[in-house]
Image (cartoon, rainbow, N blue to C red; front, side, top):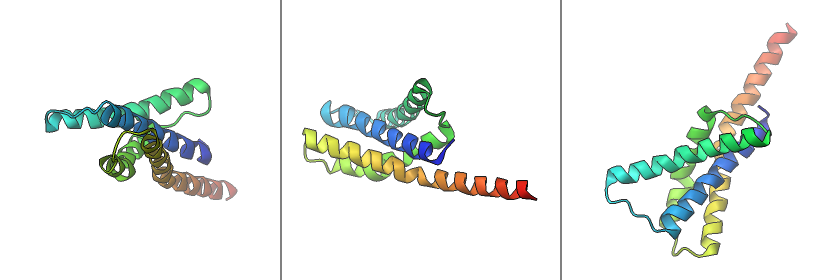
Length: 132
């Protein structure tokens, strides 16, 4: 998979996750009654965003991202930029929701950078071996 596809898939995962959080937690105001229910909702959004990006990417024919990459990107994006921003959100206005989705997109792109670096190093190593 190309490096830019990895970044776009990560950014899409972050955007999808932020959209889920914006709609479910902020707009609808879903407050899980227990810790277990909260975990189910959080992990459900994390996995759903990764699976959705994988399916959408396959259907439009752009790439075939790995769930081994998308799930950790989604998990890390949920905890670093999205959870903090959603807790600090003063209300559910359109501007706040758009900012949250922007944070999710940037967070997903950021957390996909280690996979881009890995792909770059892996490609460099394989080309070195072919020259010998």
